[in-house]
Image 1: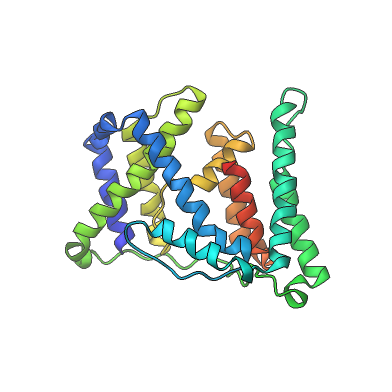
Image 2: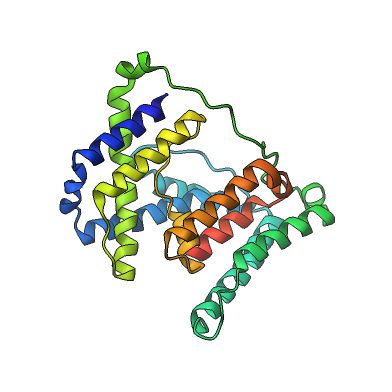
Length: 269
């Protein structure tokens, strides 16, 4: 319900040309924002890298407290998970450099991320890494979509303030990442179009009780690193995700969580 109103607000803001606020987002601000986001994402994933369970902190300086806590727990590092992460991270970084150095000679980038994910899942399943070494895996992945239903409009008045706040924050994240890649590749971002597009995505997703949609740093980096440049790349990715959700998600239940962290680190690197 919250996300349905959130989506309608985004569409309305796009129609009234609210995207003018992007004018006040300077390049240093955007770069600082995306860098800080990357730092927060990396720190939040360190616990999977070392296999530890730090105390959860909130408020100012929480990221610093988390890093200190992880360093305190380093003696409790689970060696199997650390080995898996280092080996996978090595392959990912090496092949990423190969793709960058020989991109003119290669007909298409080597899909090392996909290769590592499939290989790690197969090894974990057939070698029993989950049972033998207690490696944390993704686990059960529900398949299928919930039946769509129309949101209850009588609740809109109770959540209008929260929905507006989420819409603004989500838009800030989306436009910051969009402008970051625009600066890197030399194109412009239509801020009002981004608002309407994000609103439509959430309007459709809200019918299926999906989470709120906004730009994702890790997924954007995955697509950019594999050479995706147009909407066709996004369409192909969406179809693959849909097929995975509907039919083949169960095949990745033995995917080590630490591998997802290694993939993220290699992309940010």
